[in-house]
Amino acid sequence: MNKPVPRILAFTTLVLALLYFFPILWLFITSFKLEVDVVNPSLFFTPTLSHYRIIFQGPVFHHLMNSIIISTLSTTIALLLGIPASNAIVRYFPKKQSSNLFFWFISTIILPPASVVIPIYIIMNKIHLLDTYFGLILIYSAMHIPITVWMMRSFFKDIPFELVEAARIDGASELTSFVRIILPLARHGISATTLLVLIFIWNEFFFGLHLTNTKVTTFPILLAGYMSQEGLFWAKMSAISTIAILPPMILGWINQKYLVQGLTMGAVKE
Image (cartoon, rainbow, N blue to C red; front, side, top):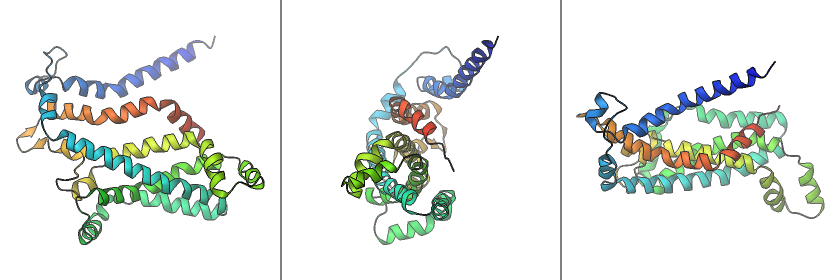
């Protein structure tokens, strides 16, 4: 009697998934069209690889490598600093004080980037870090440490710290307990946090535009270059956008099991 309900829910979920995926599919299809075919959209056209050929003959590898290097190092630094900080706040601070600290961390994320870009630009210029890997990595790491701390909070709160106390009684040091007990128990949360922070940094445009010039410009900056006074080159933009979304999509597909488990296990419990 209740069998139609799960089927309706499954069908609804499938329709919503297709609607959600349709823009990505249309983007992929458009990347194989000529610019003239984009003006009059049609499902029937002669595919071409000319846009990908033009893109890979340009500076795409330079921008791609910049994005890979900056995203990887920034994510690593944010995790190395944010994960121990979140664990320490959960374990060693009173509940009210830890809640205030976490609120302060999340409040820094709300701050609009446009409100701080001028002082950051002046400081980076004074210490000669404009258009450098170190300068951009420093900014991105600082921006995403609060996100890391906030994301890992709920995962650490779910860990039974009696296991840590038992390990301490057996002679394990604080570092050993953290590495061998806490981190393995929080691995799903770490996977989810890593993927989300990596995607945020990979897609970041505002600071990448204002703090770089030519040496360390990232992939989103290259994408914006296809918007010119001559108009929008939709087919070329679709081709380079397809390349831009492939790494996050591949990583998300590989880690989807841990991502889903991490997000569901990390529900905040007060």
